Length: 225
Image (cartoon, rainbow, N blue to C red; front, side, top):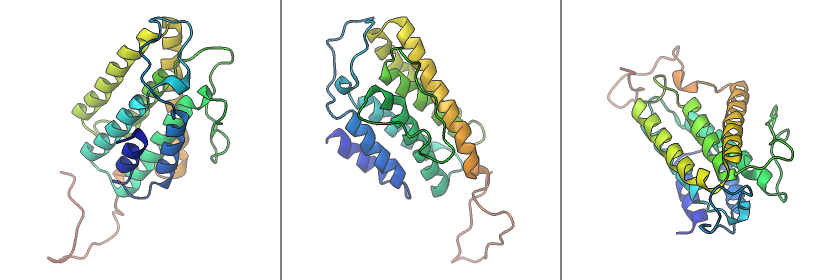
């Protein structure tokens, strides 16, 4: 199945995520000529062009995000959809500066002011994407409040695996700069997300003052024990 179709299939498992789907297609368009580039020189001072990079990293993080949502603790459809939106924004922003035919969403989304890469500096965009997804996903699903150590271990394992492969393609300076930029981007998006009224929504999925009707035919929220 083509990469684009796989991401679309992944996206329909959670409701209310139009933004997630739209940004997914934008990301896929940025990586539209994707083929695995195994010819690049190890430790190169010239990172590969974005158009030559496989979409596999983006797909793996989309799958790991859905895994995290599924196996974390106190999620509602609303919180899950919100998380997917911010993860998608981070994914898009992590690579958009590698293609001058696209533009950042910074300033276009209400209250947003995302950091830009350093002018004149080179970045390896897969490393930026990798760091941004790992860092933001753990911020949105913290332990112990809304996730589990084994879930974070899975997140870190994917991050480490992808980083190990990608750092070989560029010199250390570019690798470190790219990783730090991805984490800074994730931090900025997370801080921005706190302004939407849904921050830490997993602790208030249900109105504690609402009295649920009782009886065999009625649903009640699960206990947190």
